[in-house]
Image (cartoon, rainbow, N blue to C red; front, top):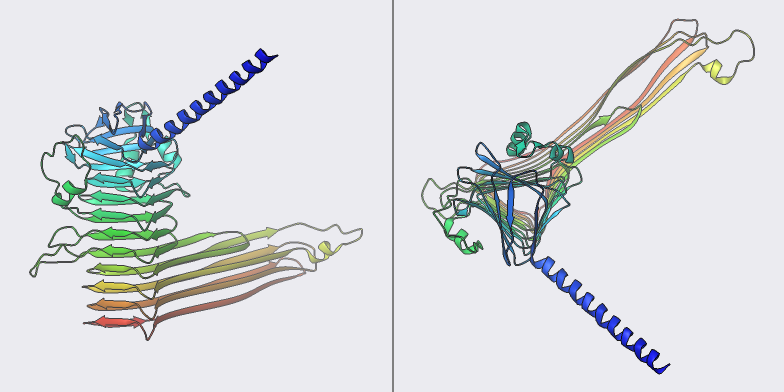
Length: 508
């Protein structure tokens, strides 16, 4: 009995030590997983991944024309790790397709051309990207997008055989977007030329920094180029940042496209609904400090553009809303445009022929007496708004233009030809359109420009016709009830600071 108890205790001790060892191993693996890179080639391209303790090298021999290709079943980079993607000699573009879920970048990704940061580099993942606060991506031009799954599935015709049409669409920025995808940036994106993000939704967090047109000296300081010999200079060509989402865009971080000392860059942001620039955000396209008459600040364009034309049923509600909301953020550039554009459109035409005779003998029910009743109800609602909040600071060395443009439109026609032996038939329709456009500048906002334009444009259109025609000795009735509401306003609060050296135009 004593020996059995002793053995039992030993087994428990051994089991406990084994469980501790397993837990320790799992914990260590988790730490290693966070620090390492998970870069896995799918086999659809001739891609070689060479992992290292802190640096992973990626090479490819899949080349068509001036473009090289990688295809990954996973692409994630842990904190403290660097992944260097090498463009083959003679190529200028590198296209990277990614599957296996959203890519998370906690470390550094460098695109290298001729041994230095460069190349026109594309990353495409239908599940989107997360660049955390420790994540960094560097390239000559950097493109991140979340194409539709169908587009990704059709991209390769076979191994090392990209679909030429798909390649062109991706490189031109015309690829279809996965509707619910997300690109979230909380770290740093650096490009010598341009940065381009396209997704269902885009979030630029308050720790994010997007820089386009980065000078060579600054590139050398910020880029982790472990094991890389600098072989020349990166030339800042354009300095352009482009964000496009089919849904909402949220910006809380810094977008900087200062470009060269004498010329500012360009920032274009487009959303398919809400475009929010939150407190603390900075958007800058001012030139980099040059002197003389040739100095020109760059442009900033913010656009919320929503359109809904889906109404086709007899009972339909068609709504659309677009808004640009700027909190206590700072926008600095040459010409700055802030636009919200919304369209809600219902358009339907019906021609019907009813030829259903009723029996001349037996009892008659209510349906027999009425013949037919057609009911229709449609509501079309559109909202467009630009709101400049208290604490917002907008400095335009050229023109500051703010515009809200709303359109609500219902066009409906129905013609019914009744050929039935019934007392009467009825067509009844109720249609409503509601459109509003507004530009508002709150007290505490500061606007400075050479020219200031603020416009609210509103269009509400209602064109409805209901016609009932009878070919028998009965009554056919067509009834339409309609209502339309339209409102446009431009409101600059008395407590707003407005400094304009040239023309001012306010219109609603």
